[in-house]
Length: 397
Ligand SMILES: *Cc1c(COP(=O)(O)O)cnc(C)c1O
Image 1 (cartoon, helix red, strand yellow):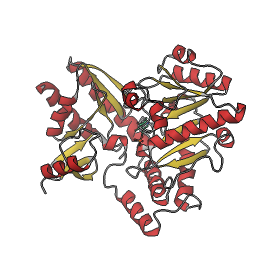
Image 2 (cartoon, helix red, strand yellow):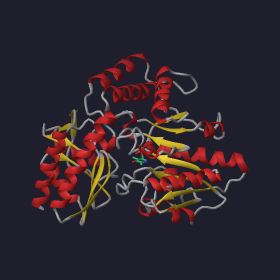
Image 3 (cartoon, rainbow, N blue to C red):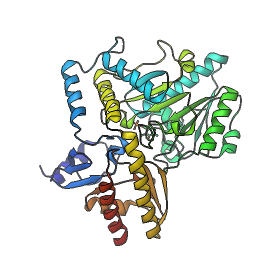
Image 4 (cartoon, helix red, strand yellow):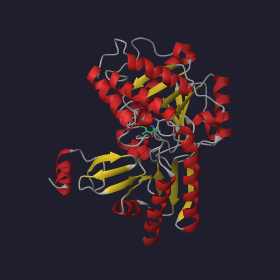
């Protein structure tokens, strides 16, 4: 079948919940993707911050194949070696104490919310606790995660939400204070907001939030699903700020393409929240997913991913700042490391479409922002190639 025919078939069979680009991607190699007609694309999306190690990493692929031949799945009623190893490695890179594996980011957020509510419940036996989340946040599409997502447009048709959620503004401590009361059990935020517009949390804000949480025994939950796993040059973005969350979520690049996520907590929360029977999952943390995590974490160390991101992230910033200086239509650049956005004064759909035609894959964040979340192995030459194509697209618009 031709590409066009596949696309027609897709639109007859798949629920239309995405306006997809008119391309069928077939294989990947490093930071390049190929569609089924053989056209080559430089990929600055990496499956939305997922394929951190690039496509076709030999060691990663071999580790998965070897695990498939051993065992793909067992129930969480039994122990399995990859999950034990993955949890140990994840504790080490995060400094957290307890891990629960999930199948996705949204499920990690669900688990974090449940853990926070249970922690508060065990203190006072009440069931009216509140969570403060941030405007412009994104935490996923399931009900709990949607309830804390600060975008009314995503929530509207699906009301009622889980309830007892309040929204404050990121980096506005007064707006958080205005929402805190004796019922507050958790404050939840992304250390760098992704979908909501690439807004990094500021150090002073995070430190004030941490202090507030300590004083009132409120749990700080950091969603590191997009900004974590090395994307900002730190294993987890909060590690830059001398603070530590009580609960954190991670997913996206965690399995580098194998669907897996996790929520992690400190020993204090672990001892005083979810107990046997309180939470579970059939697939979460199965041997295949955890073999992926183990290999990903090993390769991060072996390939010095964090050092590489600090260097290439700074270079990407420099190149994007140069574009911002060159084109009036660009309002500003913001982000951290290899998680960047160019904020335009108009919708970016046309420019992203044009880039696609020229063999460059980009994605938006909201209507006016071009988002850059490439594989973390991206090299300077790829950044040069990307900016050359993007410059052409901006000039031709
Ligand atoms: C992508 C994302 C999620 C949701 O993850 P899924 O795996 O799509 O459920 C949650 N939080 C943040 C910050 C994300 O970027």
